[in-house]
Length: 194
Image (tube, rainbow, N blue to C red; front, side, top):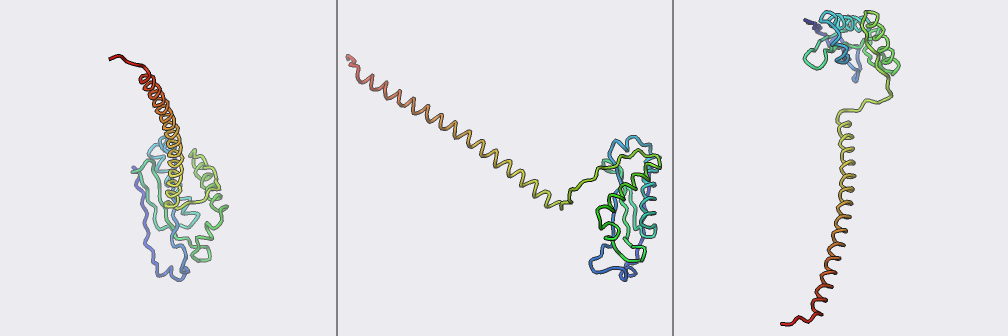
């Protein structure tokens, strides 16, 4: 069974000399894949994948900078959260230097994929995208706006259909009323013997 937790206590007072007021103090990765990938692995292979992922990230960003690595196996697919303090080689706190450009993130994913493949894992590289991150509340609002637009469209369609049906019913009533008037007049014109 995979049991892999690493937690490191940091002296944040010591970090105070490294950071500005708005500096990012911690970066986190989540390493996972889809269900099909993990279903093909034995428990030992799964543990090796997580360890391989940990080794790649800790080597890249510095073992001494890793604050924690926690494996979760209680969700749809196993995954690891790894947090590290983004300290640069010249001992400055700078997430921007690590991840400030999109190309750096693309290169990180390419390098990670090559590393795990070199360790024998058949992990497909995800497709890069130009999509921008949307905050959850904005995403939800946009989704609800779409639903409002759909409902307005449906409302208009139903209302238009009902108005057509109402006009048809009114025409039918008027036609029936006109026929009723004709029949009453015809009845009045006939002399009925008493």
